[in-house]
Image 1 (cartoon, rainbow, N blue to C red):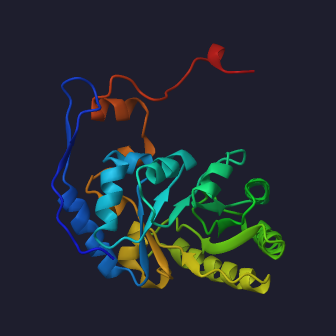
Image 2: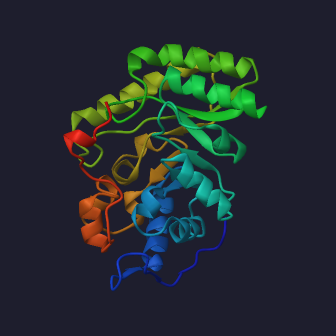
Length: 277
């Protein structure tokens, strides 16, 4: 692990003319060190959505220099961009569509989350085409209802993944989940999520899987519930200090364009006459 550093701020001018965004990387560094001190296991710096608008490359570099050992992204394109920028750290991409092009991710050594049998089939085909094992993290929905296999489908997913391991096509490196109410520690859905994840781990082991990596906690649970830490904690919102989550839920839309000063949104609503039929 590299020694902790206090990087200077970086100024981004890729917004509209006259708009300027100054990112205090020293704050990102301090936040990363804080979470690394709280986590029982390793820390994954989640730098999706261009590092939540802070610049994925400087945010990733700062996090890795200050205690993070993993990088997390949503799209495969984000992961490939980080690899092209020279980052060799372990990396996970999740929230990919079923028909994503998984091949380039496997070639670049990017782990892929698998929330369904359809995703597993897609990754397996890509691994066969690439001629080497695909590293995957099976994703169980423990109550977040945003990606992840339904518990009713989990045993079958585990058995299918084990068959892929036996055939030399896959390596199940990890199991993951995402709590839906971790920002409210007393909410009963958190206990239900922990119980579900524990059951999922046992079911996977019963299917013959022996994943070394287990991750359930994101930012809030890392702060409030050590029982959720397992071997890895995912920190995204905790890397930055924004009081709201517009950068998370609205990245690329009209509100994002307004807040950043971009000349145009990446996407937005379309008229009924523009919808493909």
